[in-house]
Image 1 (cartoon, rainbow, N blue to C red):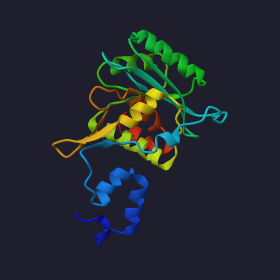
Image 2 (image 1 turned 180 degrees about the vertical axis):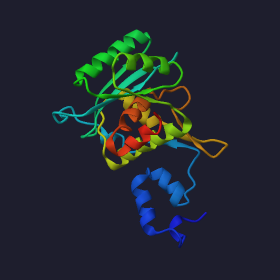
Image 3 (image 1 turned 120 degrees about the vertical axis):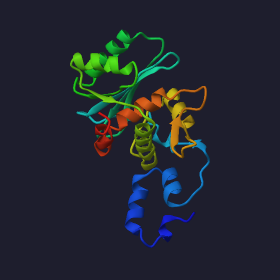
Image 4 (image 1 turned 90 degrees about the vertical axis):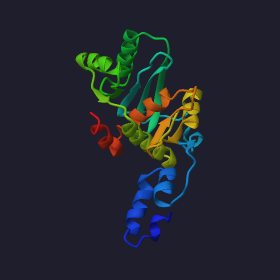
Length: 226
């Protein structure tokens, strides 16, 4: 019930390090003894991250593509991030598209960014079959198995990027809407579940979170789930 700074056995340096490494709402809960609502917005300062039309990405960029595969009622989304600048340079969203067409579009997207961009793709259920096909086709794919724990890690990393102002996103209404609506809920076990509200989607959010996790400062999180 007391904030961590009142504990004489926890150095202030450790608390300040956590403040820099955790999203605001997580730090408030874990270190400031704040009682947060069971449901609440996860991403802050989203609109501040929206780029103007004349914003440009530096030449010679390093790109990574995050892939979230659609299911019956979901969209498939490919999100391209330039690692050095933190710019989201393209979001390719498709619905009611057969898997072969999805693979073809991903191959074309990969070639459009120099043919050397890493691809981080969800490996759950039917995603594993697509990932195997992509790897067999010579694409540099990093499989990512989504669990409640691994999802929380990449979502927390993305939330921190928005709070720090490290990320820039396009003026994409679907992406912005998903980010603003995305929420957290506390489960009976005490764990936090991140998801879109009932009836909404988080496909763009997940594709972006996957791509963002490949930045150099987040790469250990990716390696944990290969």
